Image (tube, rainbow, N blue to C red; front, side, top):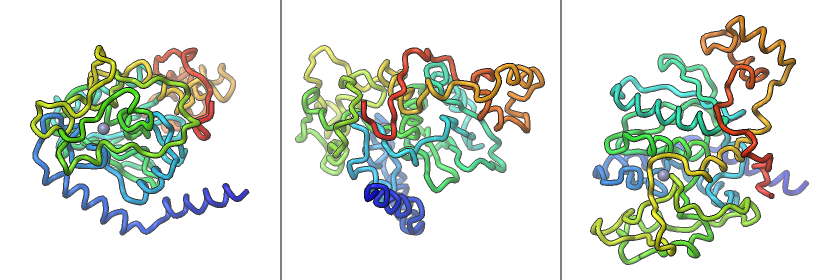
Length: 331
Ligand SMILES: [Zn+2]
């Protein structure tokens, strides 16, 4: 009972908190990212929280209060995309090449998860929440869905135009942090603090997380969310992160690792969500009438009731997921 009241208090503080305070804090971070030089590894160096995470102080306080899954992801469902559906639009200033790479990144995620991506018009978006891909200063994203609703941006700027980086930034918007900030990371990597640029040492902090929600997953050197050996290096030659496993390679930006995919599918309850919620024969009839189409006025109803028949669940292997609850994070 008491925990419920505390949760509601925190929820209303975060979701309905003073918006000017959040805006001021966001503006400050955006200004800082604009002032920073374009780095070699843009997704590690946008000058934001953990390098490329756009986060306001209130969300930060909320998330770091022990409410983060021990691997990478936020626990609270208020930061999730309902039913795993992400609406997105492209800023008109993005060049066609970048748009193509972003589309490839989205396809990469669709093939391996149950997430649904719905492109919407950039002229008058009506969805409660949506992502605008922009050509900003470097690459960055906020962590999770904006609980207050409205637009949130993912920047795929100069130095960021590759599929793995698009996937990395979308994973932030799904609610994932970086692999190297896991609380158990010191067993797997050695941080060379003296090689890190002073002003970026905070990017290597570990955060308090609920140890009960590890899902038993091993530390993932191969995660697309792991930083590279030279992240924030003073001279870009001496490493800042050394894997304790000599054979391990870190910092890949090709695409989802096996465990990245597993984690997304767990967090978004893929096995549970990929079903029709009404008579499948009715869904088939409606599909034949074109109701599954994104252009159909009934599209939203089909997302709710006929996900499986309409093929909104991606092409992932459902049997590879489990139904572990992301809200408690307990196995
Ligand atoms: Zn990142």
